[in-house]
Image (cartoon, rainbow over all chains, first blue to last red; front, side):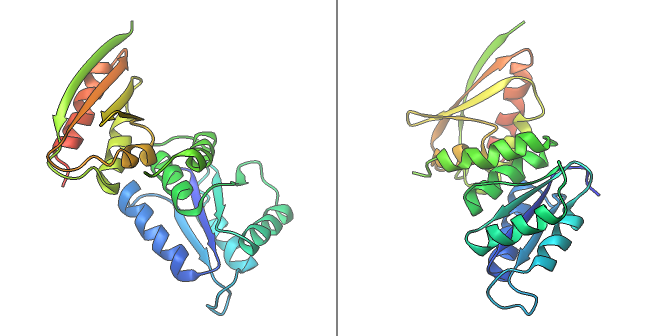
Length: 130
Length: 86
């Protein structure tokens, strides 16, 4: 694994999560540990407990994992997964999906720790784009 | 010892997502704090969203300021990224 903080993108849409993952790798570097967990097990719109759990395991390279949900049931599903397998270094973060993931991914790519990645994602709420 | 360093760069390309990411990666290798100023807005070079939000376009000039023990080196690294942006 890369040794950098892992990031899991939880979305109702597989395409949304996969597209954001692609963007993060373009900006933050191809070696980032970013996993997409979008859609249901059948590929429809919704969220999947199993996909989220598998993505967390895959993203975990030892430096912790940041789970970023888009909204609604993504938050609930991510919470249930984390409640079932509590780990101090796997955290769900309250941040805008695209901006939060981008800020966290770029910082993670510099070798920053989990706390710094969490802070970067949360700060994204307050960064104006215009 | 704290050192202040300042320089200006004319951007060969828009300071959009990819070069902003490269700026953060370059700045993070140093202890010094690096700021980028454009049109009255100032962004910490470690914040990719803030760097993008500067909205700095090709052909314009940004001012870089670094403060810290390795300010000059940090500035050189960020200047190199910005000068090579595509």
